[in-house]
Amino acid sequence: MIRRSLVATGLVFVLTACAGPGPSMSTSNVAAPSVLAPSRTVVASAGVEGIALPEPGRPFDATAILAAMRDSRRPGGVPDELETDAVAAALAEAIWTIDGEPWTTMSTGGSCGPQTCTLEIAGAATGTHGEDLWVFEVVPDSGDVQVVSTDLRSLPDDLVGHLDELTRSLFHPGTIASLRLTNGRWLPPPDESRFVVSYRSGGEESSCGADITVDAVVPSVISDLSLDC
Image 1: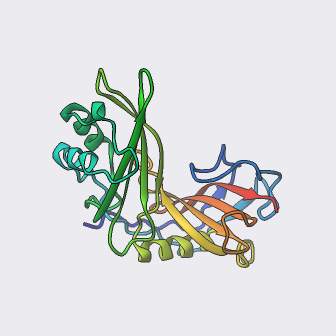
Image 2 (image 1 turned 90 degrees about the horizontal axis):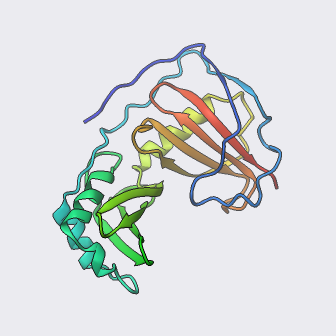
């Protein structure tokens, strides 16, 4: 189901430096921006439209999550103390997908310390850009589940292409024209219309470039992080 698409014309957006990169990024190379100038004011071109997004949702129930934990093929699997109905229900309540549909592949793995456990659940849908990864901290005794981090790249290929077009349209010509799109990732609710679009001067994650957070529904740049070479 497609949600809404808004039109923003003549808007002025102010870029601010990101507090930090997403979970898969290293901060070791973060320095003074070399690709985008700090505090750059970006004016959207007239007629820039938002992207019609799928309807996000939580597609899993406790039964599906419990089965995935018990069927884990990762070394060490999932600790027995996490394979409970209460933990599985809490995990199912926490996991979102971009279109509200379940993944076609899923993997799980975890480990436990004296009081808390760490659990990873990853999955991808057919025809998508990458893989979603959810990392949780779990207290087995209480069944308490907290999201530690997300790296959600299981995005339809056409959506990633639209995000690239939108991001480039929000910058002055030539600002990121020489950079290559490497990936996009989704920020889950409550920021479900926001995405981080990553560009590099080469194909490697360590190349100099920019990671740009955009709102896809109300076309705007939320923040940008430029990486030094």
